[in-house]
Image (cartoon, rainbow, N blue to C red; front, side, top):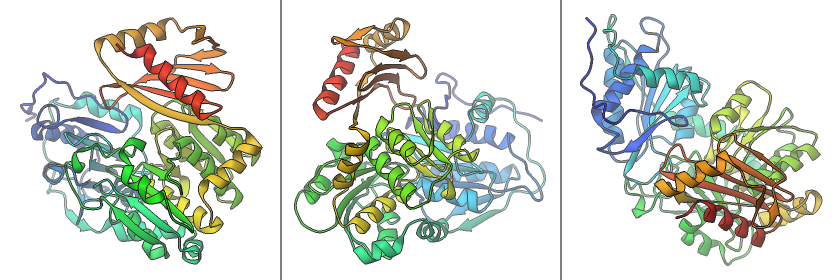
Length: 471
């Protein structure tokens, strides 16, 4: 007989981009996790021949407990489960879903959010984000009367997901170039699950690697595992002096996003890195179909792609639309404004480990700072400086944001707005870039993105964007 679990409905379970995140012990609790997994189970095939579901977690607090509960729910419902032997970075988990032909992946991680958050990412069979329609269907089914178990319990099979991922990683990176150049690389894992993955891959390729914050820590050392410039002080210091090919890399809490510090300690913007990656992959013949970019990614990457004869698609924020462009076969590469990059041959999900390896390959090949190649790109295609920030989502800032979306200004700080769009927030286009405001789907903040023709102009534009929202 169908029954209903006793689930607290005072806080509705709302899925954001790719899954569900919430505060531990308030929104994200064991009964609510079970209810979500029950809804997932109702959407899946079961019985003899049914594809398995991967259940994994990273180093966040109680991740192992939540994953064990999910495994039990699925097995009780007759659904076979793949159970990794150790915590996994999200790109590794996504690779396992795809390579082992799983129906779905459930990964307990809150990515770059602070330590008090926990989350559940739902990974499609392709290795990319679950389509929005599927997310909404599961979200709507949470807490409904459920179907009973069918037949025998699902088999739980232990797996090692890391080895297969590293072998595939090495096939998509020029490890010989890294071995010849032997670059010195400082890797800040930010106490997240990228430790033991990116550093191991680079060491196996022949790089010389120093790991910072490589020990697992569910509190992430007291700082969110988000590789923003202000959180990379030690990495910047390490790159501030020295000679020879050198590079700084950082990954967020689950290693699907990354950041780059160049020789001299300069943190490159995500849009600058996207342009470097597009150029390198196009020159080496690894991308031919095209490139998908978010609307908040700077224009340099687009101009570089078009100069190589590649088609460029622009999509709303969130990596899901970019992943779907990869899955459809229209593009080979996707990149966004927050350090997310995906390569179609490895799967449509964000992969900070592969991206880090590619940057190491560029430095090893050129034996020069990334900035040297970036200057050459800007000389040929025009300069583009990008930055992003955030303000707290208070009643006042939300009111101002809604008012701006309802009536976009024709001029901002004396500059004429050439075009504005209301897709995914508000995007104001200027002669040399843009200003974009949007509400975050994963944190209580309003995000501000800016592009301009120089560093002073972009900082000023970013400050103006914040002033439009702040109390």
